[in-house]
Length: 438
Image (cartoon, rainbow, N blue to C red; front, side, top):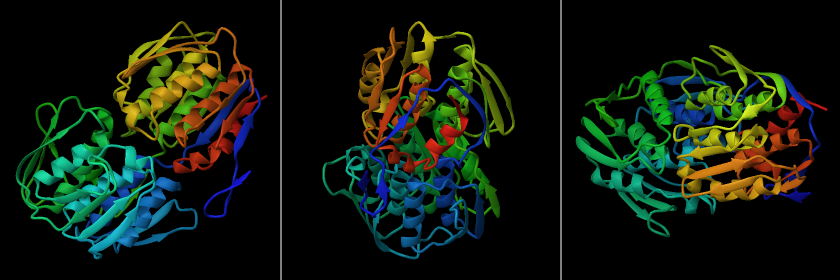
């Protein structure tokens, strides 16, 4: 055991014994992406918003803490799943602040854009890995609007210093879309803070497109309708302003659902997850279709999905541009499939919590898999002979969670630094064990 900086005892590893079957029902924690977007929109809105079903995890804590530092009044329940947010009608009361965002991209990027248009003096920093994750495309777009943003270290990367600029809206602003969809999301969410109709043109391919669609759906719930024109061109009308919807429930996290849906596919099932389903605004619900393509049986309703395994899953060749997080889970399912699985268009893995292509390939090989990798693709062949393995997690919550599924291969698996799942799913390993049958 080791001790964290806060004094909390942190487990150095968790051992998962071989699992024969996975079955049962699980209600998901709230979506990280929806939680952080909703908290920021509620803070910027006119009126008071009650949010329920929020994710209680580190990334959402970073957003809450930052909004409070900026003068937003938020009343929480003890579990951290409900918040009453008293909106500031587009103007943060605190005009000078230093914010620490950890490694929470869904907090760092949108807050950068909002504060760049807020006429104050702000400093934004994060964990060492956040300072290695690019933000230059967003900064360049904000500078074309007159924002005064400076780099505190390497150009193109956090930390950032923001000063009051001659911010103007109206006309067109271009932003690249092939590094992170969070840049487009951040820009769109912030634009109502500046006056004037503005058109955002995405240059190049827009990756993780469903996350931008989620952003537009949430902005509309808060009274701002963005018109999507040809291709990836978005027009924000003049006079747009956020207005509280009163109450809003946060969906369960579809990315977190992928591990349990995969457990149903490779562990027999049935496994049913509740809190997200066919009516979801999250793109990662599409992972259920991936499992069906690999041979699993999938059923769903408005707020649930159920998966049963097949006698033999088979490998696929698929483009995962729209759901790169769920693609990591697909790489694990590939271990249990007949034939190769090719994951294409996953270049965004390179700039996530770690270089996920390199890390996933390294850890998959420990289990006996054959893995080829390229700049934006990975090819996985299942093990001829499964090997017990100790999995390094690289402070990446998704690596820790998806490799827990390897215990269904009939070998023991050790996951190092399991507490990294606190970023999005603190109770993951307990939930996983509730479905395990040995």
